[in-house]
Image (cartoon, rainbow, N blue to C red; front, side, top):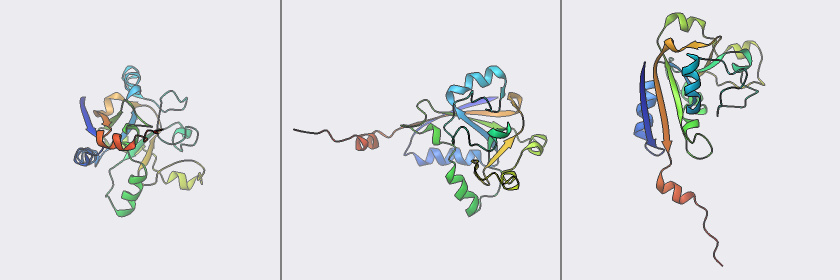
Length: 180
């Protein structure tokens, strides 16, 4: 299993675009980097039923797939229509890697091997509609669930992402000092 590191400044759109391009066609899981060692020790990505893993995605008690004992995943296999892109923009896989409020240490992306048997077991987002579970969080067209732990053997690549704050933007964000 290959491990790749991406470190870039938040304003470097080329690097972000390169990474998004790499994710197209894949199903993948995103976690805070601090969960990586635990996942490697377990040799699997477990559903976060017991809230063992820290997350920056959604509210811990309202995730549709988490509430059903599934591992939540991004599904970037579909053709990118305007509607799909709109929903992808709502759930940015890099949100937890951004400096500031979220990920101080970054995120890890687990690219799942392209495996038809794995794909057959995925629970698609439209199950949320079938169950009328509108009080629970889900991102249509983007989010899918896997009903059991995902073996580390199904991981094609681990991508560690750290986004650093642009020094110029950091200066602009500083509060002006009050002068007497």
